[in-house]
Image 1 (cartoon, rainbow, N blue to C red):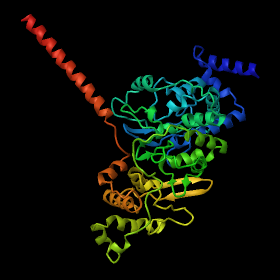
Image 2 (cartoon, one colour):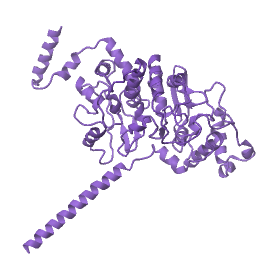
Image 3 (tube, rainbow, N blue to C red):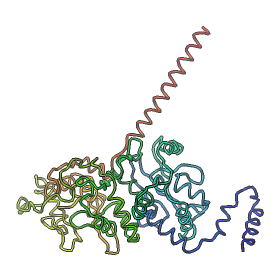
Amino acid sequence: MSALITFLRAAILAGAGLAGWSGSVLAQGLQSFDPATIERGRYIATASDCIACHTAHKGTPMAGGLVMSSPVGEIVSTNITPSRRFGIGGYTEQQFADAVRKGIRADGQALYPAMPYTSYAIMSDADVHALYAYFMAGVPAVEQATKPTELPFPMNVRASMKVWNALFLDDQPLPPAPGKSAQWLRGRYLAEGAAHCGTCHTPRGALMQEKKLLNMAGSQVGAWYAPNITPHPTAGIGSWSEEELVQYLRTGRLEGKAQAAGSMAEAITYSFSRLEEDDLKAIAHYVKTLPAVDAVENAGSVRSRFEQGHPGNELAAIRGKGYAAGMAGPQRGAQVYSANCASCHGADGQGTADGYYPSLFHNSATVSPTNLVATILQGVDRETKDGHVFMPPFGEQPNAVNHLSDDDVAALANYLQVRFGTGAPSVRPADVAQLRQGGPRSYLPLLAQAGVGAGVLALIVLLVVIVRRRRGGKA
């Protein structure tokens, strides 16, 4: 059989006049992978949550096209099916490994670190091989192009990412950890690698690099805030047991504490809820041993974000008034809540008895103003073996049934914070508008453009001076 494959490879190359070209790409079509390797690759792809980023909403799995907000602009995910024309079907295994672990495409161009290759860098050769087998033999090819990513200068110069990689990409294997259990080692490998928890939960520096000294201490991710998941008793999840963390990863819900939404809901739906129980336990065990950090949002609080707020309502203040009158008065937030939220979450914010609609007090969402607004705007859409959890978005276009204006959302968010959260209103309509557009933007592109502009201006001035001096010498 091997002789036949060698003969066919040589015949194809000779017939195409490509004797000088590596036969590895064409040989790929003749290469077979055993089912066990493909299945292992599928599991690793699930742990890596590839489908969440590389699938457009209501799109074909792995065909790309999802538009993701970042501080430097919108990034469009690519087609990673084995299509030779539009996907990665022409990648050799080495090119695939370089893309996964080094952020370098087959054509030599750099990927943007929205693709978490900085985490995947620690993945083993065996796991990368299994991933390659899965994507080449276990994923249907989709002949579909995606819109190219167009970032502002200088981010649109992909060569600049190679400089970024030289500064911030650590492609070394995980260091030894003598005395640590097999469960801890497995949890570290998954949490720091395939599951890439730090990509979202670790704060970023001025150049968008992860601040490793604040590992998992919380960070802004588009319109959402990925909270502190270190074991700090108030700033993080120190009040959670390992069993509770496993339950949250499996279901996206921990009654009286937290509900997964946004990108975390996607991670629950497509990744964590489908992992083996032992792997979930390993991740929980490792995360609970991280250094406790009190940093970033809500730092210094004496109570955890899971213990704040109490039931109550302001129905007496708005009863008997028309809707328009209530919207014009100081109880606008209460009016918006009564009209849009109370039918599910209850007049007192108590939720439903079965927990499908959660309580709004003792709920981390009402403590984080960013996630509170993002939840109102984008809703919740999460699906696990326990069922489908859905809350409609209220940030749709002005002519949509569920549309709330920036002023409406700000008033509602402040009402929820005062009534069910920390008691401190902190949301402005401008904050809502920013999150509606995808979250805060970085000043890095503007600073870089200003620096380039200043350099060009200085060069022009220098050239003018040189020309004038030469003319003066001739005169």
